[in-house]
Length: 269
Image (tube, rainbow, N blue to C red; front, side, top):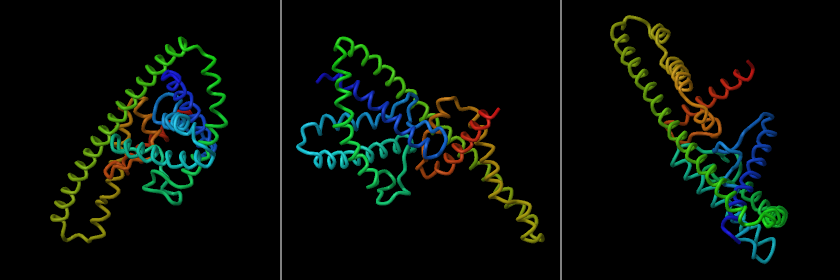
């Protein structure tokens, strides 16, 4: 088994994973949902899982051993991937918090059981055909194909990582701008209160509402930030499920909502 063939398997299974994930989520939400954090039509976690399934489980004695190995292996892979992307980019691309028996929303028993069953399907149902396809292609054709795929995949990873880093910088800058404006508004509110002690409390509340001011400034800053983002940064924002960073959680969710709303308006025009 050549490393070139293994890499081609990885890419093909990543594409199949993207097709499954996108189709499932699109049907579930009744609208197009392009899944995956990368630009291209592939979800690498599916590719890694499928290749490990083939390499690790190919010599296991029975279906039960394959099922439990894939179930446990998928849990480890999902948890570690979710943890790493959250630490690096403060964002997550799946969240099982609403499902039973989950651990920090990263993994859950129902999905792990599903991936255990998927391991059986891949190993005994899909991979025999996948192996036939790659076996039919001579190695001297596989090698340049794998190099080309690796170049595209690496460029995609680099562009996506750059966009996510830039997105975090924009979130931090936007948050600082909002905090500064709220701080200035609060100072003005205190000064105004001291000068108007004779006014009723209800009158003061009508004159200055900190929560309304915060919401209004956040909306304006989000619109300004979105206008400075390129296509890849906006796509990275839309592809994420949520921002787990305590400071970015609300802001990231609102920014994603505005991005989706803006995209919908552009499609309607």
